[in-house]
Length: 108
Image (cartoon, rainbow, N blue to C red; front, side, top):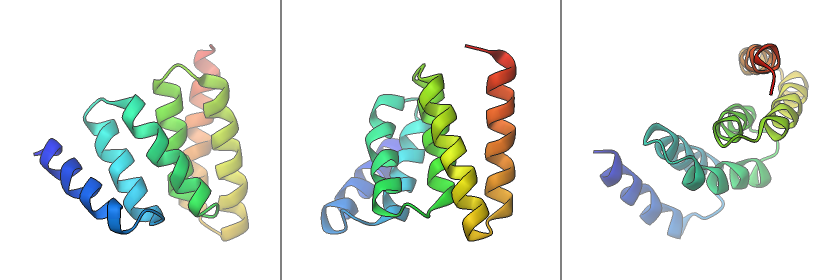
């Protein structure tokens, strides 16, 4: 099912390459499938296309952490928290704070 959904999303992306929601959804699908390397460019593009899309920072940070890029994950979550504060997206900001604190508590 996931690979079929990914194929459908990739087809949609051909027509809408700058759709941040589509990029986020595709990145999340790749993450769910365990393919962090494939998820990263779509999640990175989502925050580039829409720098105020807070939930994209949440998943990009998660993907970066899964890829062993803890420092990049920290920077991404910090940026996402700042955007969440600017936009009033309190829930996303809270979640990223928790992820950041947990990652830092684990070290690495």
